[in-house]
Image (tube, rainbow, N blue to C red; front, top):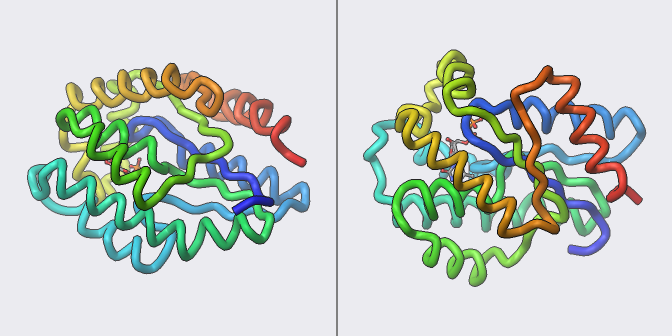
Amino acid sequence: MAGGLFLSFEGIDGAGKSTQARRLAATLEAEGRNVLLTREPGGSPGAEAIRRLLVEGEPGRWSGETETLLFTAARRDHLERTIGPALAAGRIVICDRFADSTRVYQGAARGDLRGLVDRLHAEVIGVEPDLTLIIDMDPRLALGRGLARASGEDRFEHMGAGFQSRLRDGFRALAGEFPNRCRLIDGARPEPEVAAEVLALVRPRLA
Ligand code: TYD
């Protein structure tokens, strides 16, 4: 999959990562770069179908193990059909969530499933982004924003503030675990300020 640049955005629900992913894509496109903006769970027709199973319904609908399998299945399809071909064509892929979300949401916050998450990742995914931008924010602030959207896709947001707090800790720990790949960004600032920091981190990676 050489040639392109693979960027991911991560963070708790409502931290503003989707907005930042869109802004970055628009900025790079305006410079004439070939950008693919995509998201997980989803990003290919098969993965979008799996997404609906995951984000809708009761918080207790799936066990952590089943969830891990579904997210990994969606990621495999997304990688085969969307991300892999785009990177092979030399494009800049900006992915709103990737494997770090599974490491944190399923691996750490819902029970200790990190071993299962890592084994599945090694077996069927095996790819990491070149750079991961983790938008960090106080969950109380972020949760207000997230539920305010009332999209019907709020299964994880309804798991509550304690859950969101464990997620934040999980993402911060990941930044320490993968210091070369992950950057922690303070999301509790005006949007343009966060965007400027994101761009400054991405710039050196551009050909
Ligand atoms: P997302 O569409 O990013 O929601 P939002 O835009 O509200 O942040 O993701 C949907 C939910 O799925 C979100 O709560 C995070 C969760 N999720 C996981 O639990 N594991 C994963 O591997 C991924 C990609 C997402």
